Image (tube, rainbow, N blue to C red; front, side):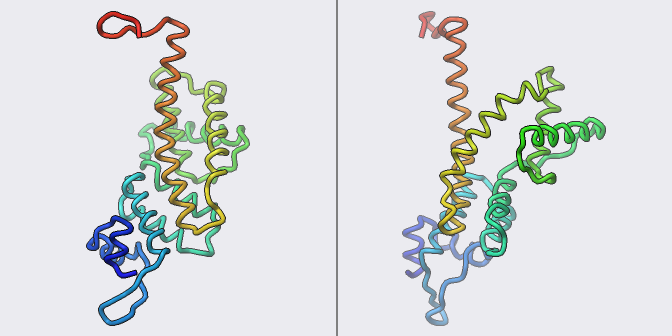
Length: 218
């Protein structure tokens, strides 16, 4: 297909496609003349992945390039490729100014993952996210010990098993990363909404129904 058809089918403007080509995010098409190239289904898949990373993952171009490089590196195991995408989705974590507290929180984050039997890269930036969350909880007077976190870990593990079972590992690498990114972000938001709805329901069971602004029970 020509670039005009690629644009129409992907719903990505031609100038944007040319930008992705210049940046190396999208493979070059097959040259049919000095000024014309043709593109295939692999280009459509890559554009879907880039759109997912930008529109759903909200990733900057530098992070997208890392993910695309991992996808293109056929020697990189799929697990490591997915890890690159996972790590890109997380926020940048600045070490806590209290170095001793930060080291202790990091040790406890790694110990928690080990106690759960999770196979985690010891340098995973997600462990820093967990450490930051532990520190914040403690400073706000909330429980952050392993027993308090175990129900969240059980729910997270059950969800991870369900989500990873749906990733199309047998297909193109682009498709696997796209599925993971969209699922992680959108189903993560969905889970948060469902949890808040469940909290309202449980609050109603324990304390009585909420009252609307007009004073009537909902």
